[in-house]
Amino acid sequence: MKKFTFAPEKDIDVIAVGRIAIDLNPNEIHRTLDKVNTFTKYVGGSPANIAVGLARLGKKVGFIGKVSDDAFGKYVTDYFIEKGIDVSHVTPSSDGEVLGLTFTEISSPTESQILMYREGVADLALAPADISEDYIKRAKFLLISGTALAASPSREACFLAMTYAKKHDTKIIFDIDYRSYTWKSNVEIAVYYSLAGQRSDILMGSREEFELMEMLDKGNDIPDYCLADNYLFHGNQIVIIKHGKKGSLAYSSDRKAYKVGSFSVKLLKSFGGGDAYASAFLYGILEGWQMPTSLEFATASAARVVSSHSCSDAMSTAEEIIRFIADSQEKGTVIEEIPWNQSIEGGRSCR
Image 1 (cartoon, rainbow, N blue to C red):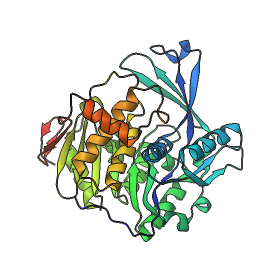
Image 2: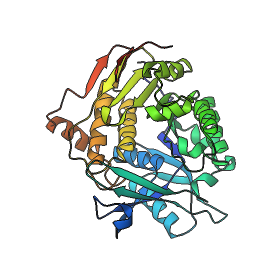
Image 3: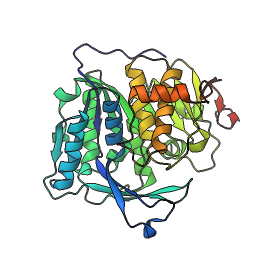
């Protein structure tokens, strides 16, 4: 894969756009939500978690978003400032929008669920007027979360941000990050996801999210490499397709493919790992590492977060991840280069 290069005047590593929320994680685990009495509050939202992860790894991070004009909005903004994230383009909502709330459920050692409150939320009030061309041109990468495309005016703000990014050679990461809330139809999802995916330079999501983007029926037999090929053709340098417990597949524009396994940890929850994975993978790319090294680093970071109670607070330093890899008995077995036309289930042909 050809390494990403950046102009010297780009002084921000990553600017993330979209959802800042509050996670309320249960203190009583292995229970359903109706039997949980107390929760611990954390900053949440996928792009917010990724921003925190990158800042924890020592990268210079900015954020473009809307928060509620109340104590919760102050809480998340102060948290960002504490972590060293630039909040000059995080602004309070003006029409009474609230911060999104996510109640999580850790119902068993292997099962977790998420309940989101997404009506009238501040992050979806982000408007084109909130997008600064001068700010975006300073960044090496712009991170767009698919949740921000679910409604207007946030949707238009994101596409304007991508337009500015293309104009100033700021690379675009599109993290599909599907949540069912606020979308009106599967056709709407496919239209806006595919438009974003065709504009990005790094595309990542689950197999189910790619199927939504391509309007594929469940049980279809389209191989992963065919889905990846489509978006590599449109200019992406890297496409990552996740398969949950089965691992993931990563494809690069130089026709290299990698099967990504997992490190063995005691699982506490099944959410948050994808955000840790994304932040650590982008750290590796920014450091100029080769794909296998970046993927291993990302997988280790994800393993640490899914074994922790929080998401944002559990993001690791580079030293912690490196030590985790060195201490793991699975070292050297997580990443495997595979033939281009091999999928999680084996080799198949494109239709």
